[in-house]
Length: 317
Image (cartoon, rainbow, N blue to C red):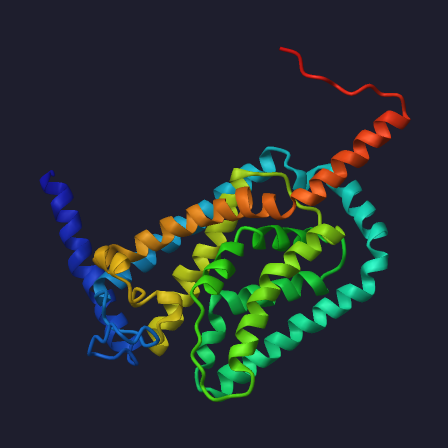
């Protein structure tokens, strides 16, 4: 390392990083407990130093914002289904074909809103309202937004297709349920109800044709991942530091030997895992869940070809 590089790094460390870290510790994270209790993962602690929080906050947010912009640029540039006339025609067809499901749409929306209202009641009166920012609750709001948005809207269609990359979070929550009972009405029951809605409502929306599902797209998967990661690195990390709450483990890792083995780099492991799981959600889970619809569409297309006298294309070796 050259002398100039060392001088620049020393200057940045002395006059930028250290003052910023002290500002975070003394003026922002005033509610952070000093004692580190790793058994209580609801409360934040200085598992990571103020210095590391400061550096990671800048680096991760810049990285995910750049990923977001670049991935969306590539998605648009490739003439994806989102911008193609074919999707506009498909959206118009969908709007005409789901009128019979209008009543069912309202029923599903009522269930989503009812579950979220119960969640707000439990968090506010349970004195942990900050946990309304947990990803599952935010995903529930995202589904509600897609349901109340105008049919055929590119924004709501885009939101729904992004959500399809986050189904893994619901499956993880169902696999490792939080059965904490704060004594309020229907806390445990609503936990299960909310998460089964998060899992089943997208399947309903796919099979009723409420939204056009984008073709598999790596650039859109990266875009969705970057959006999800920005929510963690900017929103959850910020509110976690300000309030001292360990929102989705942004301050303290889960009480697991595997995560603790990563030490101060556990958040890097979390973000890498999130990327893999976003790909698994869209490329595996959603494809499996929508397999029945694809078979139905294939049979319909084959039947239409036969009616029009178009021979089937057979593969030859």
